[in-house]
Amino acid sequence: MTDKNTYETDLSVKFGKISLKNPVISCSGTFAGGLQYSRFFDISKLGAVTTKSFSLKKKDGNPSPRIWETASGMLNSIGLQNEGIDFFISTQLEEIRNLGAEIILSIFGESAEEFKKIALKIKPVLKHLKAIELNYSCPNVKAGGMAFCGVPENIRTITSEIKSIIDIPLIAKLSPNFGPVTECAIQAKKGGADAVSVINTVTGTAFDIDTYKPRLANIVGGLSGPAIKPAALLQVYQLAKGKIIPIIGMGGIYSWQDAVEFLIAGAAAVGIGTVNFSQPDAGEKIIAGISEYLISKNINSINDIIGKAL
Ligand SMILES: Cc1cc2nc3c(=O)[nH]c(=O)nc-3n(C[C@H](O)[C@H](O)[C@H](O)COP(=O)(O)O)c2cc1C
Image (cartoon, rainbow, N blue to C red):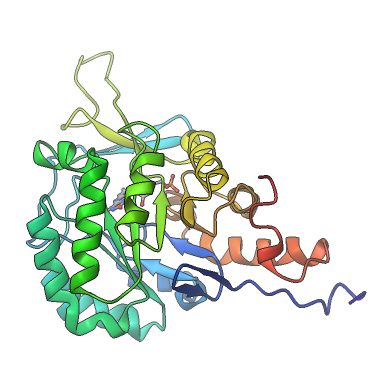
């Protein structure tokens, strides 16, 4: 078509067994339960909403202070505070469904056993979910959590065990804090994951030079936002080059230009996280921006730009 105003762009993406109407997804833990953001835009416009990571039982998380703003980003040590999977099933699921949004449920356990127990609990509601994201990152969870997620073998075992319990697309959310994510991605693939989410926050800290105290009660936090974008982009690019598994790229995406950068680096979809705190309608704007970009370049389908930089 020559008239660029009538040029139609197809934003739909398909990777593994996951189909989305567009590639823009909210990142786990940065979009509340979705409901709060529906005051700012129609959240059903997103490719999908990813929930906060839910554990088997309610978790209070780490003590406060647990947020610290940094240059071009933020440190958080929320410690995976959540209301527990029963709350998602009984309350939040219905709330998000009523808003018409596609749902990716994020879950985490501190052992394989806990992951499996959650999988059994969500069996009856699977038909309402697009996919399950398995949070293998747990940067702020102490002891068991850290060591447990840092072992690539565990990722394969748990993914395949969960796959044998529930029949739904699985996404493995990987951490950059245990070295390059490649080995974890290979294990996620072997375990039967459909995709990986890359990256979770990067561990860091900050101190008050007057009181000599850490800015976070937990001392260690996870850095997110534009500060981590180049590091995230490199992980996505390298994984995509290796053609291991489809990737949902995330880390510092603040604009449609950032999103396009991740897509050309090989991400099949993108997650938007920290930006939601300062620009609650970022999702809607990023989708519109990508669409206009494609129109301006006379590109019919978003799939024509995915991996262009590889
Ligand atoms: C306050 C906060 C809470 C988060 N909670 C979770 C979580 O519960 N589960 C998870 O997998 N990732 C969590 N994340 C990580 C994000 O989903 C995302 O991977 C990361 O922040 C990088 O993207 P961004 O720079 O766009 O925020 C959290 C991030 C922030 C800032």
